[in-house]
Length: 152
Image (tube, rainbow, N blue to C red; front, top):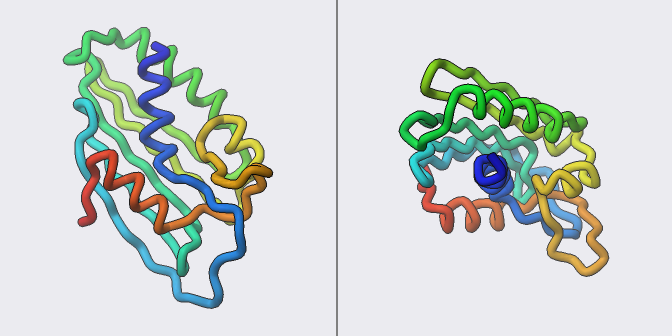
């Protein structure tokens, strides 16, 4: 179960946070990155302005029976995720069937509690002081691509 929890966190955490001022008055754009990671189909939609990520939506689907995981264990894992992701600016939902799960995690960075996101390991800081001001689109893309996802 810990492996599942870590895999889910890694998929969603594919954003490294920069501590700095970003932005300007750029228009909002959307990018979608998709792929398969360890048997999990992943789609990440990023709404951003300049280098600042405004919102990130991650959808993952997998056949957990093919991975040797029971429905009961999957339900326990989802319950842990719901507790872990009970954070301002984060929405998590999961639909479980007899052998598959579809998870959707949305992080609204404009309204999120960055300290709580850091504590939940959904984001990290690259600065020594650990202060987080925004999530970098450029770094997020690098991390998603290094995970094997490609832009659609």
